[in-house]
Image: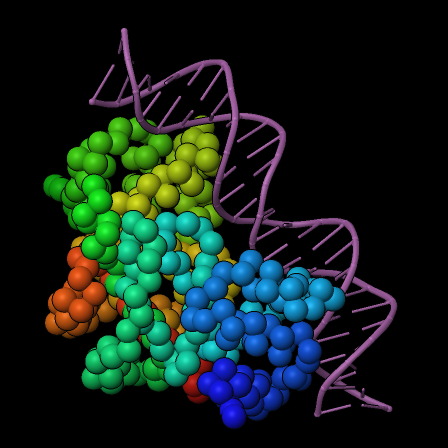
Length: 148
Length: 148
DNA sequence: ATTTATGCAAAACTTTTGCATGGGA
DNA sequence: TCCCATGCAAAAGTTTTGCATAAAT
């Protein structure tokens, strides 16, 4: 029974292969770990989780893989709050959307963004080819509005 | 003649004051420098420019001001390319939009995003109050498409 | 076989902190 | 005057690099 995680992993492995990169143990492990962590993760989340799976994988390789996945557009570093630590978010189809409470950093994911028309316009206007996007709303969630 | 930069500086100074923060030399200098650098700048851009204006301002104060401005929603750290160095972008009215070429990092700014309907829907759906947003398109620009 | 990627360990940066002093309100 | 913010310098992290070795294709 091919679960979602496995399907997703295989899909991304294919992308690496097709881009001409070797499917090494370190890379596959990092990819697997990121998928396991869900949509959002920091570099230390990944370092920690990778170390838990296989201690022998070096930190440098984790960072190198994170770079590679970013270059391929599979993940994208973003800032979800005031802190200086970036969070990597999955960009399953080249895009990602969420709302962040600027007070408590809670994240609300959503799917529809209705940006395809705008993307089309921008492609014409700037003579470019758009490959994806990140949309981040900043908000105050109910808890944070009420509490004080 | 009150030029745009000065007006903008005064406006942001008011925001600091109204939020109860002192208008110190370091803070005003950082704000001024950021406005002078245009929409996008990295922390080292700011450190460098501040040092050029007044050597006696400490690095720590620059970082503290950057944090403060981020908390107030005046600027926002983002990643514009594969590099790990964040760029701060101005969020003049709580929002910012741009297109980034994922190959050469060229930035195209644009104004209209037509997201107010979506924002409204999300406020209802999640029971939150949206205060701003960041929209970032990833693209390949004409130069990068042609060259290779 | 070849070439690419890895792990290691050190180096290079960037950002944060603690504390006595100085400067706004 | 009072308290907040500063500058300094050191500490704490994080990310990158160089190189010999190992592992994918």
